[in-house]
Length: 446
Ligand SMILES: NC(=O)c1ccc[n+]([C@@H]2O[C@H](COP(=O)([O-])OP(=O)(O)OC[C@H]3O[C@@H](n4cnc5c(N)ncnc54)[C@H](OP(=O)(O)O)[C@@H]3O)[C@@H](O)[C@H]2O)c1
Image (tube, rainbow, N blue to C red; front, side, top):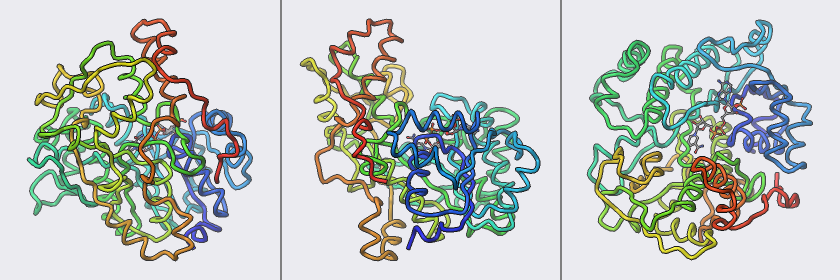
Protein backbone atom coordinates (compact mmCIF):
# COMPACT_ATOMS: atom_id res chain seq x y z
CA UNK A 1 0.00 0.00 0.00
CA UNK A 2 1.17 3.51 -0.91
CA UNK A 3 0.37 4.90 2.53
CA UNK A 4 2.32 2.15 4.33
CA UNK A 5 5.51 3.48 2.77
CA UNK A 6 5.29 6.55 5.02
CA UNK A 7 4.69 4.67 8.27
CA UNK A 8 7.62 5.11 10.63
CA UNK A 9 9.42 7.54 8.28
CA UNK A 10 10.78 10.95 9.22
CA UNK A 11 10.06 13.77 6.78
CA UNK A 12 11.31 17.33 6.42
CA UNK A 13 8.93 19.62 4.56
CA UNK A 14 9.35 23.21 3.33
CA UNK A 15 6.39 25.29 2.10
CA UNK A 16 4.02 23.32 4.36
CA UNK A 17 1.85 26.38 5.00
CA UNK A 18 1.35 27.10 1.29
CA UNK A 19 -1.43 25.93 -1.04
CA UNK A 20 0.11 22.61 -2.04
CA UNK A 21 1.88 22.15 1.30
CA UNK A 22 -1.30 22.43 3.37
CA UNK A 23 -3.16 19.94 1.18
CA UNK A 24 -0.17 17.58 1.17
CA UNK A 25 0.27 17.58 4.95
CA UNK A 26 -3.47 17.01 5.50
CA UNK A 27 -3.46 14.08 3.12
CA UNK A 28 -0.26 12.52 4.43
CA UNK A 29 -1.15 12.82 8.10
CA UNK A 30 -4.69 11.57 7.66
CA UNK A 31 -3.66 8.50 5.63
CA UNK A 32 -0.39 7.31 7.16
CA UNK A 33 1.59 7.29 10.39
CA UNK A 34 5.01 8.82 9.80
CA UNK A 35 7.33 8.77 12.79
CA UNK A 36 7.75 12.55 12.60
CA UNK A 37 7.11 15.36 10.13
CA UNK A 38 9.29 18.45 10.56
CA UNK A 39 7.80 21.50 8.89
CA UNK A 40 9.93 24.58 8.30
CA UNK A 41 7.90 27.77 8.79
CA UNK A 42 8.91 31.40 9.03
CA UNK A 43 7.38 32.48 12.34
CA UNK A 44 7.22 28.97 13.83
CA UNK A 45 4.27 27.05 15.25
CA UNK A 46 2.04 30.05 16.02
CA UNK A 47 2.24 31.36 12.48
CA UNK A 48 1.75 27.92 10.89
CA UNK A 49 -1.25 27.11 13.07
CA UNK A 50 -2.81 30.49 12.41
CA UNK A 51 -2.41 30.01 8.65
CA UNK A 52 -3.90 26.49 8.68
CA UNK A 53 -6.81 27.56 10.90
CA UNK A 54 -7.51 30.39 8.50
CA UNK A 55 -7.37 28.18 5.39
CA UNK A 56 -9.17 25.07 6.62
CA UNK A 57 -12.41 24.22 8.40
CA UNK A 58 -11.88 23.10 12.03
CA UNK A 59 -11.91 19.32 11.44
CA UNK A 60 -9.21 19.53 8.73
CA UNK A 61 -7.19 22.20 10.54
CA UNK A 62 -7.11 19.94 13.59
CA UNK A 63 -5.24 17.26 11.62
CA UNK A 64 -2.41 19.76 11.39
CA UNK A 65 -2.71 21.96 14.46
CA UNK A 66 -3.09 19.14 16.98
CA UNK A 67 -0.90 16.52 15.42
CA UNK A 68 1.53 14.81 17.73
CA UNK A 69 3.61 13.54 14.84
CA UNK A 70 4.41 17.02 13.58
CA UNK A 71 7.05 19.47 14.77
CA UNK A 72 7.13 22.99 13.37
CA UNK A 73 10.58 24.49 13.10
CA UNK A 74 10.87 28.25 13.17
CA UNK A 75 13.28 28.90 10.33
CA UNK A 76 13.73 30.37 6.89
CA UNK A 77 15.35 29.27 3.67
CA UNK A 78 18.17 31.48 2.48
CA UNK A 79 21.57 31.22 0.90
CA UNK A 80 23.02 28.95 3.59
CA UNK A 81 21.97 25.47 4.65
CA UNK A 82 21.36 26.56 8.25
CA UNK A 83 17.82 27.89 7.54
CA UNK A 84 18.20 30.06 10.70
CA UNK A 85 17.84 26.87 12.76
CA UNK A 86 20.00 26.03 15.79
CA UNK A 87 23.01 23.82 15.06
CA UNK A 88 21.57 20.90 17.09
CA UNK A 89 18.37 20.97 14.98
CA UNK A 90 20.44 20.95 11.78
CA UNK A 91 22.38 17.92 13.04
CA UNK A 92 19.21 16.17 14.24
CA UNK A 93 17.59 16.57 10.80
CA UNK A 94 20.71 15.23 9.16
CA UNK A 95 20.68 12.13 11.38
CA UNK A 96 16.97 11.33 11.23
CA UNK A 97 15.30 12.45 8.00
CA UNK A 98 14.34 9.91 5.29
CA UNK A 99 12.28 12.11 2.97
CA UNK A 100 12.68 15.80 2.08
CA UNK A 101 9.82 17.58 0.28
CA UNK A 102 10.90 21.05 -0.80
CA UNK A 103 7.91 23.12 -1.91
CA UNK A 104 8.77 26.58 -0.51
CA UNK A 105 9.23 29.42 -2.96
CA UNK A 106 8.54 33.12 -2.62
CA UNK A 107 8.33 33.61 -6.32
CA UNK A 108 6.27 36.11 -8.26
CA UNK A 109 6.01 35.91 -12.02
CA UNK A 110 7.21 39.50 -12.28
CA UNK A 111 10.35 38.96 -10.14
CA UNK A 112 13.63 39.63 -11.89
CA UNK A 113 16.17 36.87 -12.36
CA UNK A 114 18.38 38.59 -9.82
CA UNK A 115 15.58 38.40 -7.22
CA UNK A 116 14.87 34.79 -8.13
CA UNK A 117 18.53 33.92 -7.72
CA UNK A 118 18.09 34.94 -4.11
CA UNK A 119 14.51 33.63 -3.52
CA UNK A 120 14.42 30.41 -5.50
CA UNK A 121 17.81 29.30 -6.76
CA UNK A 122 20.21 29.85 -3.84
CA UNK A 123 17.85 28.37 -1.17
CA UNK A 124 17.10 25.33 -3.32
CA UNK A 125 20.76 24.66 -4.08
CA UNK A 126 21.73 25.02 -0.40
CA UNK A 127 18.93 22.74 0.78
CA UNK A 128 19.70 20.14 -1.90
CA UNK A 129 23.40 20.05 -1.02
CA UNK A 130 22.58 19.71 2.67
CA UNK A 131 19.88 17.03 2.24
CA UNK A 132 21.96 14.88 -0.11
CA UNK A 133 24.39 14.40 2.79
CA UNK A 134 21.73 12.81 5.03
CA UNK A 135 22.87 9.23 5.66
CA UNK A 136 19.27 7.89 5.77
CA UNK A 137 17.89 9.93 2.86
CA UNK A 138 15.52 7.87 0.71
CA UNK A 139 13.76 10.52 -1.37
CA UNK A 140 14.42 14.18 -2.17
CA UNK A 141 11.51 15.99 -3.83
CA UNK A 142 11.91 19.35 -5.55
CA UNK A 143 8.86 21.34 -6.71
CA UNK A 144 9.31 23.00 -10.07
CA UNK A 145 6.65 23.97 -12.62
CA UNK A 146 5.44 22.47 -15.91
CA UNK A 147 6.06 25.93 -17.40
CA UNK A 148 9.80 25.57 -16.79
CA UNK A 149 9.69 24.47 -20.43
CA UNK A 150 7.30 27.16 -21.67
CA UNK A 151 10.07 28.59 -23.88
CA UNK A 152 9.27 25.64 -26.21
CA UNK A 153 6.20 27.59 -27.36
CA UNK A 154 8.55 30.05 -29.04
CA UNK A 155 10.97 27.52 -30.48
CA UNK A 156 8.19 25.36 -32.01
CA UNK A 157 5.64 26.32 -34.64
CA UNK A 158 2.86 23.98 -33.62
CA UNK A 159 -0.28 25.40 -32.02
CA UNK A 160 -0.17 22.60 -29.44
CA UNK A 161 3.34 22.06 -28.10
CA UNK A 162 4.10 18.64 -26.56
CA UNK A 163 6.24 18.61 -23.43
CA UNK A 164 7.71 15.36 -22.09
CA UNK A 165 8.71 14.53 -18.53
CA UNK A 166 12.38 15.17 -19.11
CA UNK A 167 14.98 17.95 -19.11
CA UNK A 168 15.08 20.01 -22.30
CA UNK A 169 18.68 21.23 -22.55
CA UNK A 170 19.03 24.88 -23.45
CA UNK A 171 22.27 24.24 -25.32
CA UNK A 172 22.89 21.48 -27.86
CA UNK A 173 21.52 18.02 -26.87
CA UNK A 174 25.03 16.50 -26.89
CA UNK A 175 26.52 19.09 -24.52
CA UNK A 176 27.06 18.39 -20.83
CA UNK A 177 24.03 20.19 -19.47
CA UNK A 178 25.19 19.97 -15.85
CA UNK A 179 28.34 21.88 -16.72
CA UNK A 180 26.29 24.41 -18.66
CA UNK A 181 23.91 24.79 -15.70
CA UNK A 182 26.84 25.54 -13.36
CA UNK A 183 28.20 28.13 -15.77
CA UNK A 184 24.75 29.71 -16.13
CA UNK A 185 24.31 29.82 -12.34
CA UNK A 186 27.64 31.52 -11.96
CA UNK A 187 26.69 34.11 -14.60
CA UNK A 188 23.26 34.72 -12.99
CA UNK A 189 24.94 35.39 -9.64
CA UNK A 190 27.45 37.78 -11.19
CA UNK A 191 25.33 39.63 -13.74
CA UNK A 192 21.67 38.81 -13.04
CA UNK A 193 21.40 36.99 -16.40
CA UNK A 194 23.03 34.26 -18.51
CA UNK A 195 23.69 33.59 -22.19
CA UNK A 196 21.22 30.70 -22.26
CA UNK A 197 18.53 32.89 -20.70
CA UNK A 198 19.14 35.58 -23.31
CA UNK A 199 19.06 32.99 -26.10
CA UNK A 200 15.59 31.62 -25.20
CA UNK A 201 12.28 33.40 -24.88
CA UNK A 202 10.82 32.37 -21.51
CA UNK A 203 7.47 33.91 -20.54
CA UNK A 204 8.85 34.99 -17.16
CA UNK A 205 12.27 34.87 -15.44
CA UNK A 206 10.52 32.52 -12.95
CA UNK A 207 10.17 29.81 -15.64
CA UNK A 208 13.86 29.99 -16.45
CA UNK A 209 14.79 30.05 -12.74
CA UNK A 210 12.88 26.78 -12.23
CA UNK A 211 14.47 25.29 -15.39
CA UNK A 212 17.91 26.15 -14.05
CA UNK A 213 17.02 24.98 -10.52
CA UNK A 214 15.92 21.56 -11.87
CA UNK A 215 19.27 21.10 -13.60
CA UNK A 216 21.26 22.28 -10.58
CA UNK A 217 19.36 19.93 -8.26
CA UNK A 218 20.12 17.05 -10.64
CA UNK A 219 23.74 18.16 -10.99
CA UNK A 220 24.18 18.05 -7.18
CA UNK A 221 22.58 14.60 -7.12
CA UNK A 222 24.82 13.35 -9.94
CA UNK A 223 27.89 14.62 -8.08
CA UNK A 224 26.91 12.48 -5.07
CA UNK A 225 25.74 9.54 -7.13
CA UNK A 226 22.18 9.98 -5.81
CA UNK A 227 20.22 10.58 -9.01
CA UNK A 228 17.94 7.68 -8.15
CA UNK A 229 16.73 9.53 -5.03
CA UNK A 230 15.67 12.78 -6.68
CA UNK A 231 12.11 13.46 -7.84
CA UNK A 232 11.13 16.70 -9.57
CA UNK A 233 7.42 17.54 -9.50
CA UNK A 234 6.14 19.93 -12.14
CA UNK A 235 2.61 21.23 -11.45
CA UNK A 236 0.86 23.23 -14.18
CA UNK A 237 -1.62 25.95 -13.13
CA UNK A 238 -2.94 25.10 -9.66
CA UNK A 239 -6.67 24.95 -9.17
CA UNK A 240 -9.01 24.10 -6.28
CA UNK A 241 -9.17 20.51 -5.04
CA UNK A 242 -11.59 18.06 -6.66
CA UNK A 243 -11.92 16.05 -3.45
CA UNK A 244 -9.26 16.36 -0.72
CA UNK A 245 -9.22 17.86 1.86
CA UNK A 246 -12.64 18.97 0.53
CA UNK A 247 -14.03 19.86 -2.92
CA UNK A 248 -13.07 23.43 -3.73
CA UNK A 249 -10.21 23.75 -1.24
CA UNK A 250 -7.96 26.63 -2.32
CA UNK A 251 -6.15 29.59 -0.86
CA UNK A 252 -7.17 33.10 -1.88
CA UNK A 253 -4.02 33.75 -3.96
CA UNK A 254 -3.06 30.15 -4.81
CA UNK A 255 -5.11 29.53 -7.96
CA UNK A 256 -3.99 31.76 -10.86
CA UNK A 257 -7.20 31.40 -12.85
CA UNK A 258 -9.19 32.72 -9.86
CA UNK A 259 -7.01 35.84 -9.98
CA UNK A 260 -7.67 36.06 -13.70
CA UNK A 261 -11.44 35.73 -13.23
CA UNK A 262 -11.43 38.58 -10.67
CA UNK A 263 -9.51 40.88 -13.04
CA UNK A 264 -11.75 40.09 -16.03
CA UNK A 265 -14.81 40.56 -13.82
CA UNK A 266 -13.86 44.19 -13.23
CA UNK A 267 -12.72 44.89 -16.79
CA UNK A 268 -14.55 48.08 -17.81
CA UNK A 269 -14.43 47.62 -21.61
CA UNK A 270 -16.08 45.34 -24.15
CA UNK A 271 -12.89 43.76 -25.46
CA UNK A 272 -10.19 41.78 -23.70
CA UNK A 273 -7.14 41.76 -25.89
CA UNK A 274 -5.12 38.53 -25.86
CA UNK A 275 -2.29 37.19 -27.98
CA UNK A 276 -2.18 33.89 -29.88
CA UNK A 277 -0.88 32.20 -33.00
CA UNK A 278 -3.82 29.76 -33.18
CA UNK A 279 -6.27 30.05 -36.09
CA UNK A 280 -9.26 29.35 -33.82
CA UNK A 281 -7.91 30.49 -30.48
CA UNK A 282 -11.03 29.92 -28.42
CA UNK A 283 -11.11 26.24 -29.34
CA UNK A 284 -7.37 25.60 -29.88
CA UNK A 285 -5.71 27.50 -27.04
CA UNK A 286 -5.88 25.67 -23.74
CA UNK A 287 -5.38 26.09 -20.00
CA UNK A 288 -3.89 23.20 -18.05
CA UNK A 289 -5.39 23.78 -14.62
CA UNK A 290 -4.68 20.95 -12.20
CA UNK A 291 -6.62 20.36 -8.96
CA UNK A 292 -4.29 20.67 -5.98
CA UNK A 293 -5.22 17.19 -4.69
CA UNK A 294 -4.05 15.66 -7.99
CA UNK A 295 -0.66 17.33 -7.43
CA UNK A 296 -0.58 16.00 -3.86
CA UNK A 297 -1.54 12.42 -4.69
CA UNK A 298 0.83 12.24 -7.65
CA UNK A 299 3.66 13.44 -5.44
CA UNK A 300 2.92 11.03 -2.60
CA UNK A 301 2.42 8.08 -4.96
CA UNK A 302 5.64 8.69 -6.92
CA UNK A 303 7.62 9.15 -3.69
CA UNK A 304 6.28 5.85 -2.36
CA UNK A 305 7.00 4.08 -5.67
CA UNK A 306 10.53 5.53 -5.57
CA UNK A 307 10.18 7.23 -8.95
CA UNK A 308 13.11 9.47 -9.88
CA UNK A 309 13.47 12.25 -12.47
CA UNK A 310 10.71 14.61 -13.68
CA UNK A 311 6.97 14.10 -13.21
CA UNK A 312 4.24 16.34 -14.57
CA UNK A 313 1.45 17.08 -12.11
CA UNK A 314 -1.03 18.32 -14.69
CA UNK A 315 -4.49 17.77 -16.15
CA UNK A 316 -2.92 16.71 -19.44
CA UNK A 317 -4.48 16.44 -22.88
CA UNK A 318 -7.70 14.85 -21.57
CA UNK A 319 -8.20 17.14 -18.60
CA UNK A 320 -7.12 20.58 -19.81
CA UNK A 321 -9.67 23.18 -20.86
CA UNK A 322 -10.11 25.15 -24.03
CA UNK A 323 -10.22 28.91 -23.53
CA UNK A 324 -13.85 28.72 -24.71
CA UNK A 325 -14.79 26.33 -21.87
CA UNK A 326 -13.06 28.52 -19.32
CA UNK A 327 -14.68 31.68 -20.68
CA UNK A 328 -18.13 30.08 -20.61
CA UNK A 329 -17.67 29.14 -16.94
CA UNK A 330 -16.35 32.63 -16.18
CA UNK A 331 -19.30 34.42 -17.77
CA UNK A 332 -21.71 32.53 -15.51
CA UNK A 333 -20.02 34.13 -12.52
CA UNK A 334 -20.68 37.73 -13.58
CA UNK A 335 -23.88 39.15 -12.14
CA UNK A 336 -24.68 41.84 -14.70
CA UNK A 337 -25.17 41.01 -18.38
CA UNK A 338 -22.02 41.96 -20.23
CA UNK A 339 -21.17 41.50 -23.84
CA UNK A 340 -17.42 41.48 -23.54
CA UNK A 341 -15.54 39.52 -26.16
CA UNK A 342 -12.06 38.10 -26.31
CA UNK A 343 -10.16 39.96 -28.98
CA UNK A 344 -7.25 37.99 -30.41
CA UNK A 345 -4.14 39.59 -31.87
CA UNK A 346 -0.86 38.14 -33.06
CA UNK A 347 1.35 40.36 -30.86
CA UNK A 348 4.24 38.87 -28.96
CA UNK A 349 3.40 37.49 -25.49
CA UNK A 350 5.46 40.33 -23.93
CA UNK A 351 3.52 43.01 -25.84
CA UNK A 352 2.35 45.98 -23.73
CA UNK A 353 -0.86 46.16 -25.83
CA UNK A 354 -2.43 43.08 -24.27
CA UNK A 355 -4.88 42.91 -21.37
CA UNK A 356 -2.96 43.08 -18.12
CA UNK A 357 -3.78 39.42 -17.29
CA UNK A 358 -2.23 38.34 -20.60
CA UNK A 359 0.77 40.55 -19.83
CA UNK A 360 1.09 38.90 -16.44
CA UNK A 361 0.39 35.24 -17.27
CA UNK A 362 1.74 35.28 -20.89
CA UNK A 363 0.65 31.66 -21.52
CA UNK A 364 -2.97 32.70 -22.17
CA UNK A 365 -3.55 31.96 -25.87
CA UNK A 366 -0.99 29.12 -26.00
CA UNK A 367 -1.49 25.38 -25.71
CA UNK A 368 0.79 22.79 -24.13
CA UNK A 369 0.22 19.04 -24.17
CA UNK A 370 2.06 17.99 -21.03
CA UNK A 371 2.80 14.28 -21.01
CA UNK A 372 1.65 12.33 -17.97
CA UNK A 373 2.94 9.02 -19.21
CA UNK A 374 4.89 8.26 -16.06
CA UNK A 375 1.78 8.54 -13.87
CA UNK A 376 -0.20 6.37 -16.28
CA UNK A 377 2.57 3.73 -15.92
CA UNK A 378 2.66 4.14 -12.13
CA UNK A 379 -1.06 3.43 -12.00
CA UNK A 380 -0.41 -0.03 -13.43
CA UNK A 381 1.57 -0.87 -10.30
CA UNK A 382 -1.38 -0.13 -8.01
CA UNK A 383 -4.21 -2.44 -7.04
CA UNK A 384 -7.84 -1.62 -7.94
CA UNK A 385 -8.83 -0.77 -4.37
CA UNK A 386 -5.90 1.58 -4.00
CA UNK A 387 -6.50 3.36 -7.32
CA UNK A 388 -10.09 4.10 -6.33
CA UNK A 389 -8.97 6.06 -3.29
CA UNK A 390 -6.37 8.13 -5.08
CA UNK A 391 -6.92 11.38 -6.91
CA UNK A 392 -4.29 10.95 -9.63
CA UNK A 393 -6.19 12.57 -12.51
CA UNK A 394 -8.39 15.65 -12.75
CA UNK A 395 -12.09 14.82 -12.65
CA UNK A 396 -13.66 16.35 -15.75
CA UNK A 397 -16.86 14.29 -15.63
CA UNK A 398 -18.89 17.46 -14.93
CA UNK A 399 -18.80 20.69 -16.97
CA UNK A 400 -16.05 23.01 -15.74
CA UNK A 401 -17.33 25.57 -13.27
CA UNK A 402 -15.97 28.36 -11.12
CA UNK A 403 -18.87 28.34 -8.65
CA UNK A 404 -16.94 26.71 -5.79
CA UNK A 405 -14.48 29.58 -5.83
CA UNK A 406 -16.96 32.48 -5.81
CA UNK A 407 -15.79 33.50 -2.40
CA UNK A 408 -12.16 33.71 -3.55
CA UNK A 409 -13.05 35.52 -6.81
CA UNK A 410 -14.92 38.11 -4.77
CA UNK A 411 -12.07 38.44 -2.31
CA UNK A 412 -9.60 38.97 -5.17
CA UNK A 413 -11.98 41.38 -6.91
CA UNK A 414 -12.10 43.56 -3.78
CA UNK A 415 -8.30 43.80 -3.96
CA UNK A 416 -8.49 44.70 -7.66
CA UNK A 417 -11.17 47.33 -6.96
CA UNK A 418 -9.06 48.87 -4.21
CA UNK A 419 -6.06 49.04 -6.55
CA UNK A 420 -8.20 50.75 -9.20
CA UNK A 421 -9.65 53.03 -6.50
CA UNK A 422 -13.14 51.78 -7.35
CA UNK A 423 -15.80 51.65 -4.65
CA UNK A 424 -16.09 48.19 -3.11
CA UNK A 425 -19.82 48.04 -3.88
CA UNK A 426 -18.84 47.66 -7.57
CA UNK A 427 -17.58 44.19 -6.62
CA UNK A 428 -20.91 43.33 -4.98
CA UNK A 429 -22.65 44.44 -8.16
CA UNK A 430 -20.47 42.44 -10.52
CA UNK A 431 -19.46 39.26 -8.67
CA UNK A 432 -21.78 36.56 -7.46
CA UNK A 433 -21.90 35.96 -3.76
CA UNK A 434 -20.56 32.67 -2.46
CA UNK A 435 -19.85 31.30 0.98
CA UNK A 436 -16.42 29.74 1.54
CA UNK A 437 -17.02 26.04 0.74
CA UNK A 438 -15.07 25.17 3.86
CA UNK A 439 -18.05 26.44 5.88
CA UNK A 440 -19.66 23.15 5.02
CA UNK A 441 -17.51 21.18 7.40
CA UNK A 442 -19.14 17.90 6.38
CA UNK A 443 -17.43 18.35 2.96
CA UNK A 444 -14.07 17.53 4.47
CA UNK A 445 -12.84 14.17 3.20
CA UNK A 446 -9.44 13.55 4.66
N1 LIG B 1 0.63 28.05 -7.41
C1 LIG B 1 0.84 27.53 -8.62
O1 LIG B 1 0.00 27.65 -9.54
C2 LIG B 1 2.10 26.71 -8.89
C3 LIG B 1 2.22 26.14 -10.17
C4 LIG B 1 3.36 25.40 -10.45
C5 LIG B 1 4.34 25.24 -9.50
N2 LIG B 1 4.21 25.81 -8.27
C6 LIG B 1 5.31 25.60 -7.32
O2 LIG B 1 4.85 24.76 -6.26
C7 LIG B 1 5.45 25.14 -5.03
C8 LIG B 1 4.40 25.41 -3.99
O3 LIG B 1 3.53 26.40 -4.50
P1 LIG B 1 2.30 26.99 -3.65
O4 LIG B 1 1.39 27.65 -4.63
O5 LIG B 1 1.81 25.95 -2.72
O6 LIG B 1 3.06 28.12 -2.81
P2 LIG B 1 2.43 29.22 -1.82
O7 LIG B 1 1.01 28.92 -1.50
O8 LIG B 1 2.79 30.55 -2.37
O9 LIG B 1 3.28 28.96 -0.51
C9 LIG B 1 4.65 29.20 -0.46
C10 LIG B 1 5.21 28.50 0.75
O10 LIG B 1 6.62 28.67 0.75
C11 LIG B 1 7.01 29.17 2.01
N3 LIG B 1 8.20 30.01 1.86
C12 LIG B 1 8.41 30.95 0.92
N4 LIG B 1 9.64 31.48 1.07
C13 LIG B 1 10.21 30.85 2.12
C14 LIG B 1 11.46 30.95 2.78
N5 LIG B 1 12.38 31.82 2.36
N6 LIG B 1 11.70 30.16 3.83
C15 LIG B 1 10.79 29.27 4.26
N7 LIG B 1 9.56 29.12 3.68
C16 LIG B 1 9.30 29.91 2.63
C17 LIG B 1 5.80 29.95 2.51
O11 LIG B 1 5.91 30.04 3.92
P3 LIG B 1 5.29 31.21 4.81
O12 LIG B 1 4.07 30.59 5.42
O13 LIG B 1 6.35 31.47 5.80
O14 LIG B 1 5.00 32.36 3.90
C18 LIG B 1 4.67 29.03 2.06
O15 LIG B 1 4.54 27.94 2.94
C19 LIG B 1 6.36 26.33 -5.34
O16 LIG B 1 7.67 25.87 -5.50
C20 LIG B 1 5.79 26.87 -6.64
O17 LIG B 1 6.79 27.52 -7.40
C21 LIG B 1 3.09 26.52 -7.94
